[in-house]
Image 1 (cartoon, helix red, strand yellow):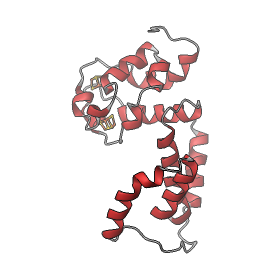
Image 2 (cartoon, helix red, strand yellow):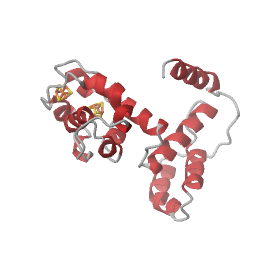
Image 3 (cartoon, helix red, strand yellow):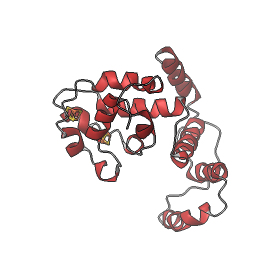
Image 4 (cartoon, helix red, strand yellow):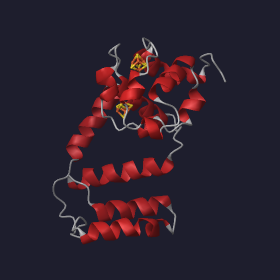
Length: 182
Ligand code: SF4
Ligand code: SF4
């Protein structure tokens, strides 16, 4: 394992700044509802950030599984912005093209695209676009039981989009704000 900050690991610098006061108490891990599914616990991840283990971090699923519940941030005795640090790791992974979890990326992108276009998610359109992006002919069959369940409960709408309620302006502002504060 590399323990020094190589040139490549400089991409971790903004996250390192956020967690450098970590005392490894483990409160974040104990507070995290998703820690059971993570390959490295949040406490472990912050140690890896301090050690500059870039490849190990971006090959892990830990930060993808953060659901931004803020429990760790609220409970960290050092008051560290941990949810923001997880979010920053996601942003770096996209920017540096280091995403290992392609299905999640495509799922998220198509979900947000549907919200941008209609002001809410249109499930049928969103899933159709996701299946097309995944280029996996058998994937829709995997989702069929869930689709039928949702259909029975009246949770799936086949209504054609009206073209109104677009959140274009809001999304544009978010992009401008991100570009202004990279
Ligand atoms: S709760 Fe805060 S201080 Fe404790 S391990 Fe997590 S980040 Fe570090
Ligand atoms: S914000 Fe993320 S890392 Fe923190 S407790 Fe919630 S899910 Fe876990």
